[in-house]
Amino acid sequence: MRISSRSSSPVRLVLISAALLALAPACNQKDSPPSPPARTTEGAAHAASADPPAPAAERPAARPAAKLSDAQIAAIVVAANQVDIDAGQLAIAKAKDAEVKDFAQRMVTDHAAVNKAAVELVTKLGVTPEPSDASRALAAGGTEARAKLDQLEGDAFDRAYVDNEVAYHEAVIEVLDAQLIPSATNPELASALTGARPAFEAHLQHARHIQAKLAGGGAGAGAGHAHTP
Amino acid sequence: MTRSTARRAAACALVAGVVTSLALASCAEREPRVHHVEIRAMQFVPAELVVDVGDVVVWTNHDVVPHTVTAAGRFDSQQLASQATWRYVAAGTGAIAYTCTYHPTMNATLIVR
Image 1 (cartoon, one colour):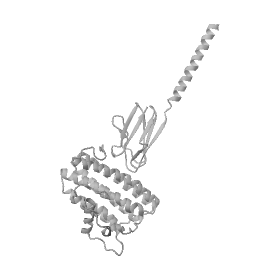
Image 2 (image 1 turned 60 degrees about the vertical axis):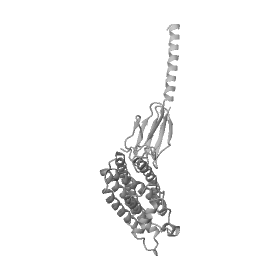
Image 3 (image 1 turned 90 degrees about the vertical axis):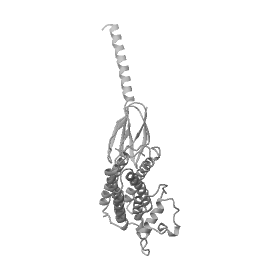
Image 4 (image 1 turned 60 degrees about the horizontal axis):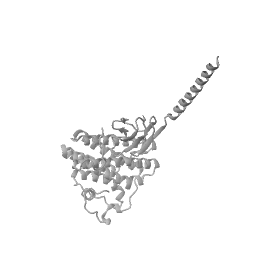
């Protein structure tokens, strides 16, 4: 995962850890007890700071990954999109900066479209989304992140929301590449996951651009033009 | 019909024939071509397209998310839903930079000659 040089807000870490928890079922083998929440948050803090990574022997990702079923993948995809839809709806209501508000509207529209396509596909394939620890953790992490965001106002809210968006899209891309796409057995599902990746990447670049602008980096950084009606 | 009248008639017929031929040739030269730009994986493909004035460009959105095809002051498709198409008849020469206003990483150029 890309290491960000920005400071790590608590809100940001919650969402990072939520997304990274999607890896947990794949990384926790049957003979390994699940990591306690505090340990998971620590791992997320590592991911979001410039701290050196833990030794390979301590990193869960060093273990062979268990394969997710297509039904579990479907539930994770729906949960991941819903997390960003919900965050976007909060930002539409609370954001102060017009560009942040427009971005939030774009996230709601795009992630709803991705979810609609995902549900249509799994319905066609006869796959019923199956909740897992990963999808439940994503949903719970999203709820917690929104609660923390909701306590912020004005510029602080805008910065925290956009920081979250950067971290969220980085984490989701990581999970797509490391777990979801390699685990998908149905070719159409794998193709749909691969097809959704560029949208997440474009959102990430867009969020980084706004993040730089809010930090005083000017409009020259990142994605350039960023008007989203 | 006198000889001079006959000559004039023949000349007129010749001129008319030439004019008709030129007109037909001109029409053939101006027959607009149709070009296609695919919107796929958050990109315009091809990213650069050269067309002649009067040609038709058709954009098709193959992504699941909506896009726009927008060149400030020149053209704007407004929201283009998944699988929707939008046509533009190329007018005015020059390079026209355009973007998706929803996704600022998506940029391309239409060159009209």
